[in-house]
Image 1 (cartoon, rainbow, N blue to C red):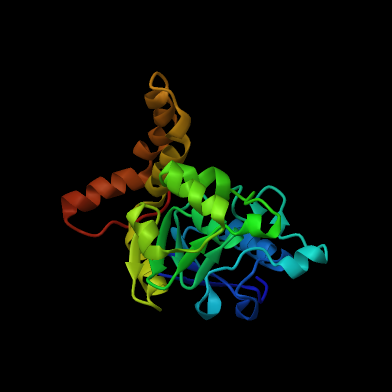
Image 2 (spheres, rainbow, N blue to C red; image 1 turned 60 degrees about the vertical axis):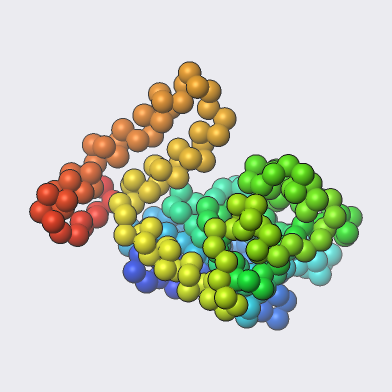
Length: 254
């Protein structure tokens, strides 16, 4: 990993930190490549079952590095999109831990995550129209699928900042914490997730994500294609055995 992206793994959880606090963690090419490289490695590791994405220095991410953009530094990775994440989120669960600003591309990174934990001081927004741009890294597509249409329109068209409490009411933010505690809460939740069977987690996430456009006629058939291997896995047998023997399961990801 580069200095712009830090990775720390403990208890089955990988914390991925955007480390450009001097630029409010604005995403440049190095950050995008760093996140993509981290995910490429971590997706293959059996000792990692969940991720937390956060930013250093009290800010989640202020979006694309506009100075870098003007200089031709593109914060996009082929196949993964902006920030090395938005077009190809990981198969494993990922939680955004938001302090300070999650603006523009920063908000879009959070929208690419499965769960959002934010401090009471966090602010979210899509200010791209104020810069002659469009929130094309998933913002204008994902946001109206997560919150009511009219609120999504207000956020996307005004470019205003919206507090975590408002987005908690709208169902976008899972939990609001006191200032400075978003990361700790996200890690605690990620550890609870990581305690579960990795194959079951990946299949569960895949069904939730992919089933949005399945028809009623095909949904159970398509679900079975994804979950059948889980029911025949060694981990499924281990889960049943651990329950019968009243002990903690020992997952192998097989």
